[in-house]
Image 1 (tube, helix red, strand yellow):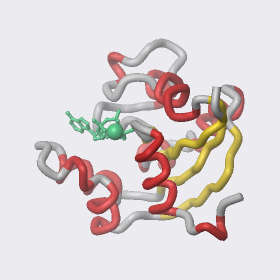
Image 2 (cartoon, helix red, strand yellow):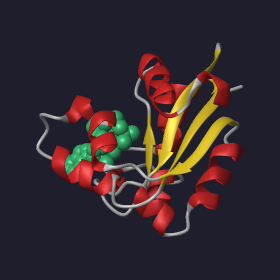
Image 3 (tube, protein in one colour):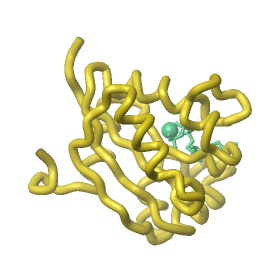
Length: 139
Ligand code: ATP
Ligand code: MG
């Protein structure tokens, strides 16, 4: 198993609700190491760029508005099989369909306000991490 990295954001609904600590504890308890972390707020323009892959989907406008509605926490994580193990830890996009014990089952409010982002491939993890962190901020 290769040690590798993935990228996550704690989304505005979870930050607003005071779940940063609980979510980071679940992430640490699952064996992920934090490589870089930033508390910030996205402009609509930056959120639109981050989610540009979804620009033709019907929920794009809602997604951009939501992701720029309040602060987020951007994090690069390291673990064996980081990307796929993290997708398992967060659960399905729709929290009503997420498995028991997953981050979204516990903390997400809805399919739109679903508490966390998780990269969907190693390649996207690298791109998304680089979107938020320069080489100097990572170790
Ligand atoms: P993410 O990329 O944030 O980790 P995901 O990979 O589980 O989530 P995607 O299909 O990539 O799901 O959708 C990106 C985000 O768009 C979702 O996390 C959610 O916030 C929002 N979204 C997805 N489907 C819907 C929908 N039907 N209605 C509203 N928002 C949606
Ligand atoms: Mg996705």
